[in-house]
Length: 417
Image (cartoon, rainbow, N blue to C red; front, side, top):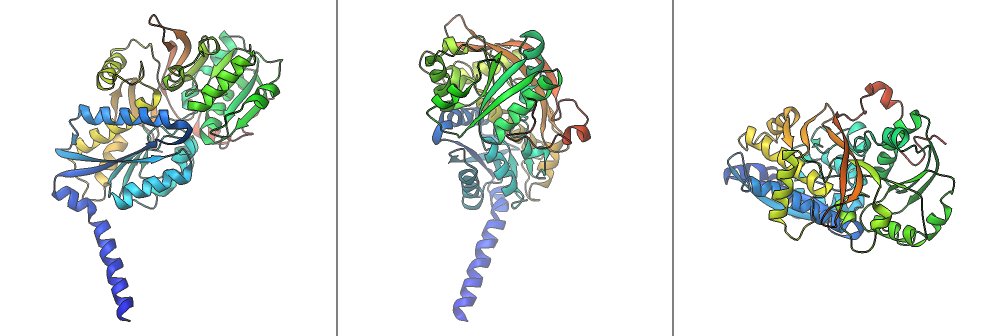
């Protein structure tokens, strides 16, 4: 009985320590913030730039918010849901963070969203994960995404491909998880509505290295190939497609034409120049808000990319949102972050890509860019702005009840063969 009593007392002490973490930080004038990104696996280069974006926002606030010093902890995942939850648990349950920024990849976001429901006293802000399901279906009251989702990132692309480029029959190649499902859906919904057909879909695992069978199976009678691959996966596919003599025009998912791919070493220019795409950023946008962000990024990270990636942008925006809301509540998280989350829900501010706010599901409403890959004067590949879709919401402007009838994006949904 003595042993049992000691065990109970030890457990109670541990629980008390965890519950009092926020109060202790408030007392010593610090706020513990965690940042989680993929620093392992096929998306490592994406995660490295994500960290640059988060740290740039902190630097611009002198690592302070609400009159308190931000104490930063970081954690790494490999793009798998299990690794993301493990990293989030480390930040919350070992490091005692009160605010967590991340994760990076789609299925990671769904898993961390679910974990957030078990930690209502901690506030989670997305990194760049963009699966639609994270916020549209079964959202968490303490998980916010100011960086929009993968369906939103495709706003305007399906129409442009059909109406302006004349593409009527398309095949797709995409990674087999929740974010590319969202990207393919965002492209297909308007493309199919206009009369376009997606005649074949190829789904590949993250980290795939040999695309020979995928390339061989692509139909010949298509006007273009839609590619939603990221990081090393995109580089491997594009290199092998070029080597195989592939001639079909490409349509890019957001991360396929991101700077994390466009800046890759090797001769990918012939495969990528002319690729139309869409996403939350556009390299050549001449708006002062964007150009100022690019200059600040280059000054802080001279060894970074020629232009900030969408991952740097997403982590920057979500970190900026956290810091602004902390300022509004004077850094007071003593109520388990309730006032902080109320401030986040009402927050509207200008980002490097225009205004952003969140909807009732705490998902961002923001500008989206249709782009085309071109070569800049200094020889770098960049995304040239074709048009800007302003204030894109999570249902692409459709009534929510009608949009929800489509159901969650998946390998087979939607379909328009």
